[in-house]
Image (cartoon, rainbow, N blue to C red; front, side):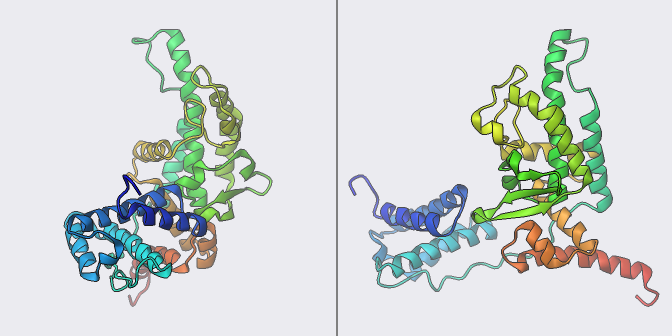
Length: 332
């Protein structure tokens, strides 16, 4: 325990339990650990020297302190982490009483997700496909010589093919960014037009995609991916890259930041509202529901563990239904 605070060891035990039993991602585990450590650090400054010295009133003072600088959504996550930590400690006999049991999670306003209209989504997809077929984007004749233009084009062309395939696949399947970057070549089945996706908790599911996404994926795999994998003068495909479906400019597996940038750029270029990949996921779900898909089918496709999560999308569809009703029904 030398050099350690009084709460580091129990936090490590808690995170170890979550990692072994809940299948949480590394980022989620890091956030939980940080939330609990920040709480106990503040309580330590208030005088607490061990877990048994922490009472419910202490935790409420911590909540009041944090609520001044954090949004309700952030506070909800912090309270869930702290409540889970003290429940874990109590169940294992590390503390006699669970002081966090009475804590209530703040209510988060149920705002409607931002979505594109079907026409906007179609325009965004068409524009991405058009951009993939264009040859521009390199330096001009005035500021670069022919060799530099050729080098720039050798990188720019496969990236445009990649970004078009990314946008098409995100919209066609509604998958998460983390799921997209984790896709390997063997996860795509063109004969069935499906992709095998590994979601939260390492749960796998199979999602379908349509002909436009298939076309973009084939162009990327056949004409774009080999150039980035080989390097084209900018990379040297690693062993992990050999399996990755989508690659970065240097030949390694693409990261989430690059995917987000690609989606934002595609939205700006198409002249539609600037949306994130998650908003594109919302759009896909809403459009499937509007098209008559069953709620449970959409739940399965999106990888939601709870139907209530998927039901959030029905709010948007109901709003659109109400507008159509007002326009079309004679006694609206």
